[in-house]
Length: 419
Ligand code: ADP
Image 1 (tube, rainbow, N blue to C red):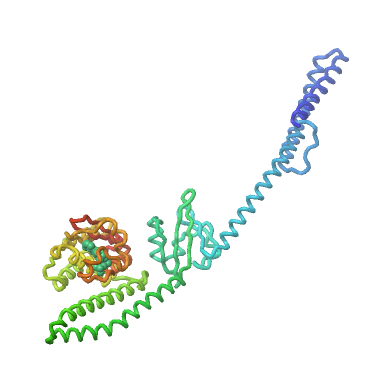
Image 2 (tube, rainbow, N blue to C red):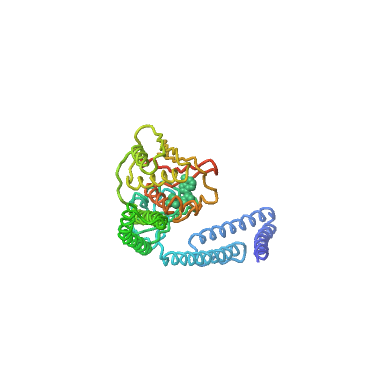
């Protein structure tokens, strides 16, 4: 088709130039005639190019020409048609994606590199109570929970975040994509939290109910221990006492754990001195085991914002473990303040923990050595309590242990909690 148009264009130039030459010949000026023919054919071509240019702007009916102009117009019409089809298909696909995102039960919010909202779906509108004109707003202006603001600014999105917004429990997971863009998936976990709370309440209620009969049993056992009991009964009485004490420990730890689990992470804490708390625990340990020597190393007061009771419980568990499973004498508690926050170390020189246990040791009822623990009387809940209490202080337990040399349990209270 292109070849035909090209030939017709050449033919047109040849015919016009030929006509000019023939006319010039008849007047005895063949050269002038040829030049006049070439000029006319050139003017003709320029006029055609002008028609094509003007048509390309306003489109409408294509220029009627059998040469290159007509061919070019035809090609442009075809290309435009195929582009239109492609755009239409892409628009349909985009619409399908949008409908899919809109139909999701989870909230979706797309953010630009700085954290301004680009777009969001209906579920996000409901969960976060967004309005149409919230596009362009910074996300932290709309979700003001301090937990979320800290999570967002820290830019470490490896773990999802749970927080409460207007009494709805939400879980947020941020993923980065493209050039510095972020997609935020929001899930309403209010119902899951409700079931979890029911389970926690059930455990707390059962534990509380067990407390009363245990107090009675312990009372009678204590009373019998002061009396003369027949020799064959002595061993049985001792075992009953130790098992009853174990059960009391277990019930107390269960109550403590469920209290920690049900405590809202949105509460306001108070300021207390970590150094002073460690000293208090060190003197309390004298009552736990006389031979234990808890050595505190810290430079001055370390004031932090948090929950004193929970930190007391976490540190007491770590120190009693260090005494129980350590060599029974010296435990080192060190507090070191740096620009990252306050790092607390609890170190013992006991037999240590084999590496394969370290990842599971904070699980409830996980014990490294069952036989050893039956003597030490642990409930298996101590480190689970520590883990929860530290979570409420935006901290995590780290364990370093070398078999035969001892263990160091440590955690970092982040800088923003230092007062
Ligand atoms: P328990 O109430 O049994 O002490 P924990 O949750 O406190 O439960 O500890 C879990 C297990 O981790 C313990 O049973 C013990 O085997 C091990 N463990 C904890 N602390 C130490 C330590 N300092 N040295 C060696 N083993 C430890």
